[in-house]
Image 1: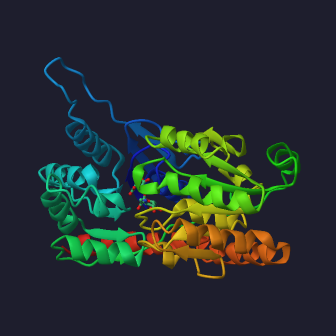
Image 2: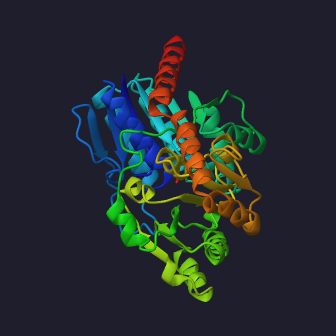
Image 3: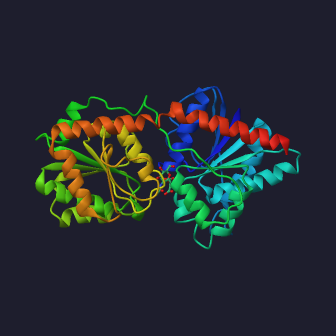
Length: 378
Ligand code: GMT
């Protein structure tokens, strides 16, 4: 198949999923065309089946806000026509689903019918999409897509509950590539981070409010009082300064390392014993899956799609959003006993295996085939 992929090219989960999906589809012989405003962060791989088309937005003194949507729609029209694509797969509804609809209508005037698959990832539904300034467009563009997927059952339920949806939604969960994400021996790095063989806790995110990075620091503070440990904070974003300030106020900044944005997440996970994800909303929790693939158990909140990934008492524990005491108690339960920690690490890895890309890729391939077949009938 010739597949066009539209996504945010950043380190955000939707962009990561879109890029990893495109890379895997290309390895499976499909021709993949990424159409984004800059090269996707994880498009670090050469394949004769991978193409990248940059959306350039013209600047003009009249524009306070450059019209990205128009530039993207025009680029989609151009790429679909020239490359003769079979399907367009857009990730994150805003604005990609409505832009794809516009491109589809323009192409129809040229006698070209391009089916559109929209994948809903999370805040495009749970936070941003619900806002009155977006919801009519989000509803319309979901209903007008030829195929719609969500990354968890919970996100599907939330979509149906929050918008007036008149079409089917298919759940296809996030996935993991074990050739990259597995536990690697990084003993020298571990000794540098934890010279006293302390336990290492880790959090990675884009430090938005929804990630509750303050709770990460508070959980660690409680753990550290009982069991001397280290915390690695990976990523960057608006809440990073507050998290750093809180670590200082609690007197633990010497045990907390803010590493900023990092490419080799799997290497940092390989020296970690526990992953913390206390988010107030999380449609799936890709970062937690990456941790589990590297045999790192997870302490998470029980919100959104997290219970579909993290199994209570097996791959880690889940607590109510904001219940820092409970999360700290459960973190200590896992970390205090070496045999128990090993048991949780093994169980986390086995749970992650269920989301191996080898299991999930065929779901997307079959879904594209069914959407293309339906479109041909119409
Ligand atoms: O929805 C978001 O906040 C953005 C999105 C992204 O692009 O970073 O993240 C979401 O998509 C990931 C991939 O499908 C999911 O694993 C994340 O759970 C989800 N984030 C939230 O729901 C907060």
